[in-house]
Image (cartoon, one colour):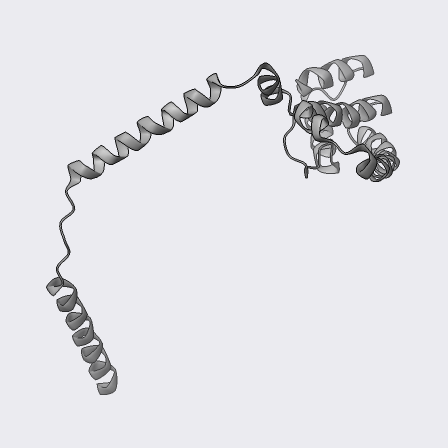
Length: 171
């Protein structure tokens, strides 16, 4: 026990020495008004640069801003990439068709709903999306959750009511 008290005393003495050393150090004063002036000047410059950037854009650059597909289509190298892209597309199609049909069945919907929910987001994202590495589509968890919610809403729904409610929930 005595060793513990001595260790704590040594430890506290070391902390006191460090605190004293920190207090004895002097730091140059930085005038606050100058720093604030520099920040505001920097902000003004960045705003001017942003305004110039938007004013200097051509109509095609504006279209590229809202429809990113236009930008990559202009620079797409057909000879180098078309074969690999076709193989990737066929592979995704071979996987997504049975997968989307089974997810629709998990959700309690006809298979057509699964096909629409798999292909339409991919088409929309290819036009409006900006990330090259992104997985889009349905999942088993979302299908099961959807089915559970739909059955909790009204377990005695007809198929037509179920489909109508499913479309409304999707939007």
